[in-house]
Image 1 (cartoon, rainbow, N blue to C red):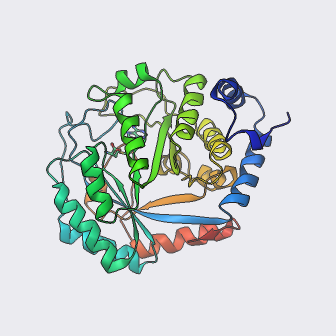
Image 2: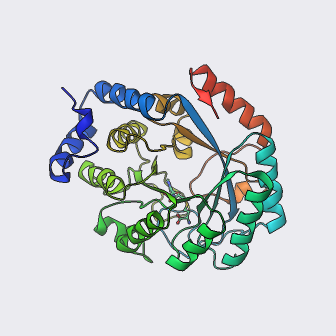
Length: 331
Ligand code: SAH
């Protein structure tokens, strides 16, 4: 195989789609991993950014069929207060974090105005960059958050196949989701898309479309993670996404979006602790660490995972060591 890496960012979709599809399933992927690692080194370097993930509310009005926070589920719901959020942000900053990712379900009970004020306060007290990941909103709401100082917005498109999207999302359309991504980009957010690998009914051709959709925005960051079946959802019993296929998708995303921030997603670590270090060698340059305080952390169960007690500073130190051991630079 002779991979024309330079062509990936610009080649027309019609040319790339069959190539991506073929690469995703070929027996030997080593050459692509190596190419992605080389592109990563040239563009974003050896730094691995560690982001603090604060899950500040698990209320959600949506009913995404794969997600543990589905509004139809009877479960204990929580919403952190502004004071609690600020305290967590300050703890993260003191531990060395430079970015706070604020994630929640789509929670109309958390007033937008308050969210904006909290963001302003975090920025002025800590100087951290703030990424928001709170789902779909109206353009004026995104614009307000941007004015309050939000730097980035993470809104995974989940799947680029409209029929599969409709099957999985009884309350939303792919068109709306992608429309939100374009709006965020236009408003000057560093814009993050992404998708799940191994959704029931997903084919390699769909993953190829997912990758091309990221390029079409174009996304500044992309979260690509395996689907993990949640026992409380309709999709219980479905097989989990493959970590190998997920890593392949991350590598191809690196070739399509050479300068993007690509997390080794939390879900990948959940499936296999070993895989996570590996994913840093196939194009990823970011990792997120939950700093959500106990007992809220245990209640934010998008997919099942074993969670220890939160130790913001200690867990960060440990992760820094693991990153250094891989010859990379934690930041
Ligand atoms: N409400 C926000 C945050 C969603 S949760 C939003 O709408 O963007 C964050 C991400 O978790 C989702 O975008 C989805 O890709 C992922 N996720 C949800 N359920 C999952 C599952 N069962 N397996 C793997 N990832 C899942």
